[in-house]
Amino acid sequence: MKKIAVILSAGFLSFVACGATEAQGVSLSTDPTTRRVTVSYSLAAPAIVTAEFLTNGVPIGMEKSWAMAGDVNKYVTNSACSFAWQPRAEDGGFEAAAGDLSVRITTWTLSEPPPYMVVMLNVFSNRFYYTSEKALPGGIGDARYRGDNLLMRFIPAAGATFLMGSPSSEAGRNPRTDWGDEARHYVSFSNNFYIGVFELTQWQMASIMPSLVSTYSGYADSRFRPAETFSGEQVFRGWRNNGYRWPQDDHKVASNTAFDVLRKRTGLLFDFPTEAQWEFAARAGSETQLPKGLSMGNVSNSYCANTDRFGWVTFNSAVDGVFQSHPVGLKEENGWGLYDVIGNVGEICLDTYDKDNPFDLVTAPDVDPPGYETTDRITMVVRGGEFENYLQNDRLATRGMQSYSSSSRLSGVRLWCLPPEE
Image (tube, rainbow, N blue to C red; front, side, top):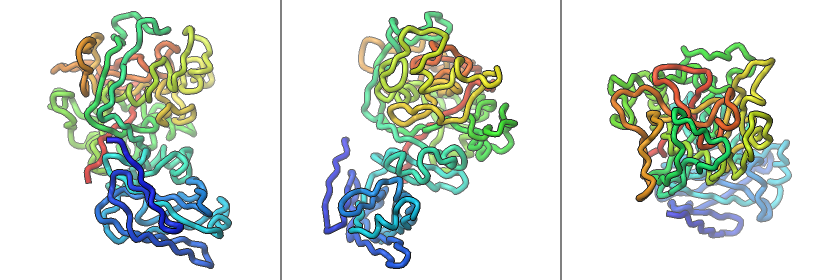
């Protein structure tokens, strides 16, 4: 159901309800000496709460007001609530707070949350919600979102239908059957989900599984590069022949695997995305070769400016003559704010690889397709291309594969999870 925003003003105070309980009894006070701002309000039922400050009715900008603490930017369960904001001099905050200051409080449901969720890896079940990249503490470039925090993007997939695959005329489409079938077909989804804004980094993987070491551990920027050498599925989910098969065993994983540790630490159902979920998120509405409706044009193995905007591939990934991955988030994001959806490292999906996955091209859209079902899984689907690939093999529709039990410096992980249930 589409969110409907209702704005009610009360002097210099206002709130917005996005399908959630409304904030009531909002009050604001400012310390005349420190300019510290305190906001109080009440909730009749739990909700995610975000806030924005305004002076003289004009928003001061989320990048200036993110330094808030208390019952804000989180799922709030208590009824009597408050939070504080300390304006920063470097943001012009003291000058801003000197005018007619007001606050706009927005409440959200867990099923229709703000776009961004930050999951802390070093604090159990601790997560925060933000309305934009600018609202993130420190901004999208802050190292913490490549380190001890996971930055997840909400994907409004429930009830959505999209055209998966590529047309036979798409430049760069590989006709070899052993590289997989990209036949176009409609797919729809039953549920919304979250997906990682960045590929899982080595720093984050070390927080989850400290014993694992990457190929690029000797580089100064290695901790911000994708977690690539321990991407064998057994590290994350468990050996398939022991009852951790997808889709037969659903999201079941073995004890002490990476996903088991991550689930226990965060309280969220983390896993790989399915191939369909990955492509839906990566396309963000695009039906072309590249994100944001862009095209490579006639594909060659030489420089392509559009591809260079989004990913690391053969023509730009080499350092001192050696092809290699690069720190995440250095290229342009796609339409939903996801970085490195093409190039850098391939991203493992739940699906078992098959060159002729059983797509239904004629009747109704495939709903939540799980991919090929087998009791003897040999390979898994890898999407997004990789840094050693030529351009045509890093398109949004490109399907790759990797052995189930192997690890590769060419493959990494983009985390997926279902919305939390409080």
